[in-house]
Length: 163
Image: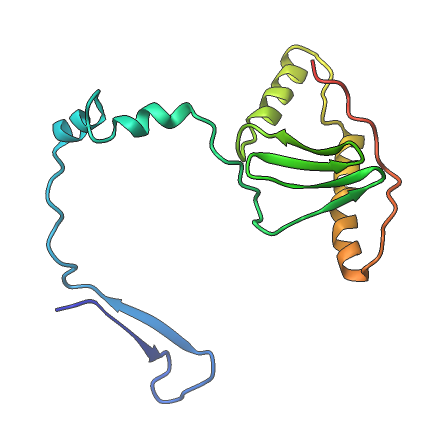
C-alpha cells in the first residue's frame, strides 16, 4: 500500500476551524537502495579516478558569496563600496580597486579570538564598542532604506590594526 497523507477532524461529530490533525500511514516506502560499493567509491577518489579533480581543486579560491545575493552599495565620504565576485569593489577618486575576501561564512575566527583572550590573556579585536558600531551600521542601513535618506552614525570606532 503506498504512503497516504490525509486530514481527519479531531472531533468527528463537530467540524471546527483549525481543529484538524494530519495522519500518516506508511506501509511500504519502496525497495531498499542497493548496497554501496565502498571500494569503488574509494578508487574514484584516487589518482586517475573520476573524482580526482574534485579533490585536487578543493584548495583553489572559490568566488565569495555574500549571505544575501542582493546588491548593496555603501556610499562613504570618499567613495562607494559594493560586492564583487571575489570580494569588494571600492570606487573612489583614485579609480576602482578590488579588495579580495578570503574564507567563507565561519565563526572560527571569533572562537579563536575568544580562546586567546581567555586562555592567553590577550586583548580582543571585536570588543563591545566594535559590536555597537557594527550594530549601528546594520540598523542605519535598514533605517536609510525605510526613510530613503542619509543616516549619520555616532558610535563608530577605529578598527584596531591586525597583528
